[in-house]
Structure formats: structure tokens, C-alpha cells
Length: 194
Image (tube, rainbow, N blue to C red):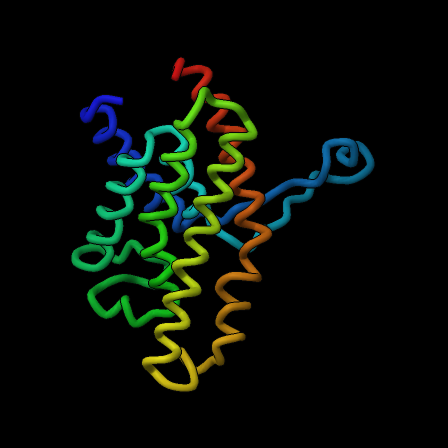
């Protein structure tokens, strides 16, 4: 991929990540139930933020994904309140900041694996899963380090409660978003011939 195209995908990635931060993910009931009852939507309890990170990795590659997330963090820490709970230099004290840091290697790993071979749904799904697990790994390491430095609790909650709140509870919804990203990436890469 050319540097100009990677730069374009990085810009798209920043915009998608900012937009995805504020859009909650929903699913509908299965279509075979629609005739028996109204179409109901159910919240997944997560936003499309992680989906944007993984989508840029699957479509723009490793460099575009990493560049977009570096720019996203720079914007959030200096200029704009683009993170879910605001922004600014003090945001590194938030327990979720480790997950935001994980976007950089998570997007890079997703992009690296997504372009190892011709696009197959299984490969894209695996690359999204690896990227998601990388984000959670970084987040858990940051929570642990923050817990060790700040004492017995982080933001007034125990470390095990923080793991549950920030990793275990959102993981099923994020897995669903990752699966949707893999399918969408497979379709779009076929349409874009790469």
C-alpha cells in the first residue's frame, strides 16, 4: 500500500474512532421473529470505538491503524475532548486510559495479520480477535500498574472489580462488533480489489 493511501486511511481512522466513541452498538432480534412481534433492538453495552480501530487495521493496514490511533490519542490528550469521558492531559489517570493506549498495538496487530494473505473471512476474523485481545491485554496491564502505584484501589474500586467492569463486561459486545467488522472488511476488500 502506498504511503499516500496509508495516510488517507489514517485520517479516516481518526474520524471513525472519534465518531465511534459516541455511537452505541445495537443488534436486532432474529429476522424470523419479526412477523410474530415488532422488531426490537438491544444494546450491546459498548460503542463502535473498537470497531473503528479494527476496521482501519483490516482495510488500511498496520501503519494506517497505528498512525490513526496515535493521532487520536494526541488529539484527546491535548486539544479535543474526544474520549468517552472527556480528554486533557489528566486523562492518563483514568482507569480506561490503558485500553486507549492498547488501540495503537491492537490496530497494528490487526492490520499486520489482515494483510498476511489474501482476504478470507477467517483471517479477518482472527486478526480482529487478536487486535481486540491486544487492546484488553494493554488495558489490564495498565489497570494492574495503576493499582500497584496508587495503592489498594483505582478510582475507588478494587482491581478485580476494575477487570470485570472494563474487560469482562464489555467483551461479549466487543466480540460482536469485531465479528461485524470482519464481515464488513471482507466485503469491502472484495469491492476495492485488495
